[in-house]
Image 1 (cartoon, rainbow, N blue to C red):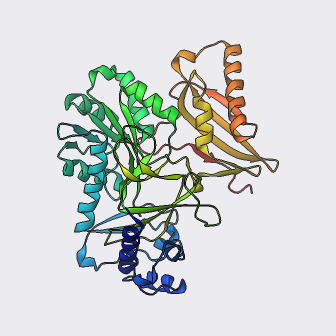
Image 2: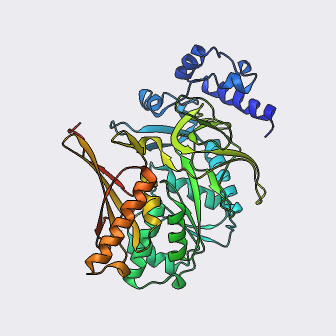
Length: 419
């Protein structure tokens, strides 16, 4: 999209959001009263950032830009304060969402001949519905099984001949574990592609999933405040996630300054064509970097690197910023362990402590104390190299860390009340 085309799209969104009184006030404070006030990208960047707290303050429908008789669906994400963040869709928004997801599926070679098992949750969460509508728009056969009920998942996967699996990466590994327990091999299945998202995951985890399930593992990104899954998605080259042209991305530093291409920071999105719930400069809390260009797959536009972590996932331990994904990367660089772990943060004698439970693989589970001590020390060294802090690693038996059928719980912070 050329500069003038982008500015026209941004003006269109400004015109739409001005229907909401909250945005009228917010834009007026920035000196923007009409869409025509956006003459340059610099003008656009005067607009204050939108945050999740803005949605909570306007709960439930205060940021909707169309009357309720034009809203055909709402989705919501859970809220830590008890109130969810609510988003609305017009009929045109739903069609646009389906088209965006379908275009991403086409790029990875999904066709009308595929059988797609959608194991994301259905309901107020956008994951299941977004992929479901995109698959139907493409013309593929959809199995709307939702999350959980793992043995049934495997039975239908085998009996229905599923070729594409959609779920969180942690649940994909759980399915692989469960396959081994019931005696199903990857050769018994027809899976060829997995579409995984809703939580940060590493290249090491990609390798693990691909090796155990015999598939290509593709990253998909989205969040309900922007649209839902499909805002960006990898192609088969896996050199980043291609952002759909209906969204304008920025990456900002901690002070809110726009960073140049290739510089990592917090991802911010503006929608260009949404009607029911348009957003201006929405802070995603996700950390990534951006580049603009043409991919070998033919996509022209913005590409984001895979989300490395979330701003609100960051742990501050003894004054050091630590992300769970850093610890995961270190763990998975060592052979003999599974990609299942739990980070326990605590405080003793006014000092933060960091312990990581790491699950042994079945092949490494041994009575040889010396071997286990060496493996434990190796993992501790690897983690310390990455985060710069000493850490206590505790090796645990295979399958002893609780599995998740949705987003994996990786951190247990016990410092509350000890601060």
